[in-house]
Amino acid sequence: MSLPSVHEVEVCPKCGSQNGFYIRSRVSGLVQINYSFDGSGSDNQDMYTPLKHNDQKFAYCQQCESKIGRWDEKAKSIVSTRVRF
Ligand SMILES: [Zn+2]
Image (cartoon, rainbow, N blue to C red; front, side, top):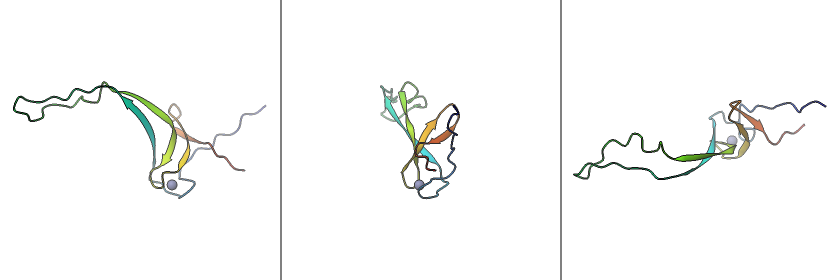
């Protein structure tokens, strides 16, 4: 039995855009926002560090927002979920 071949995506199959894609990430947690006593902001550089993020598995086109495929974080590639022959 042979495994199905992997189709990596380089352009959006729907609109042809090469702009890139995005994945969604569900973020939760508490952040610390630092202030000076005069009410002005101070160093908040590490504000988002303690957040937990749960990256979703689907990749969407930045241009037309259609679902392109499944993002494979380890392989750094998109695997098409709708392969047509
Ligand atoms: Zn697109």
